[in-house]
Image 1: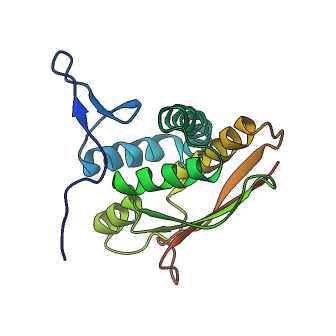
Image 2: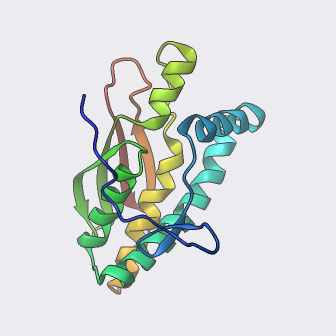
Amino acid sequence: MGTHAPEMPISVDDETGVWNTDALPMLYVPRHFFVNNHMGIEEEIGAERYAAILYKAGYKSAYHWCEKEAELHDFTGDEVWHHYLKRLSQRGWGFFITESLDVEKGTAKVRLENSAFVYHYFKEHGCKVNRKIDYMFTGWFAGALDQIAESQGLSIRTKAEQTQSAAEEGCDVGYFEVTPL
C-alpha cells in the first residue's frame, strides 16, 4: 500500500494558526476523535434524530462550501459538483464517485468507497453493524446540488437519501441518491 502527500493546498495563518484550503478555514483532527464524538452523540439521542440534525447542518454547509469554492475557482455547474466530491475524497472521508449527475433534473447518484465511518465502526465492533452509518454525508449532496442549480437560475430543490452502506451485510460500498423534492 502506497501513500502520498495531500493533494490540496493547505496554508496556515502565522498569526492565528488557522488552516485554510482554497477559500475556507479548515480543522485537522484525528479520525478516531471525530468518529468517537459522532458515535457518542448517536448513543445519546439515537441515530435517527442525529441523522436529521446532521442533514440540515450538512445541507447548509455544503451549500456554503460550493458557493465559496465556485467563486474562488470561477467554477460553474458540474465543475462545482466534481470539485466538491474531489475535495471530500481528498480530506479522508472516503472516496466519493459520481455515477450520475443531472443538475437540471435535480438528480445524482454517488458511490462511497472506503468510508471513514465504516472503517471505524468495523474496528470498534469487529463486524458490520448492518445499518446505514454514513448518514452524515446525506445532506451534503442535496445542499451542493441545490447551490449549483440556484447559481444557474434553476428553481429545482432536492433531497438526498443514503440507499446503501458498506456497513450492511452483502454491501461493499455505500450509495446516495439525490432526487427532486
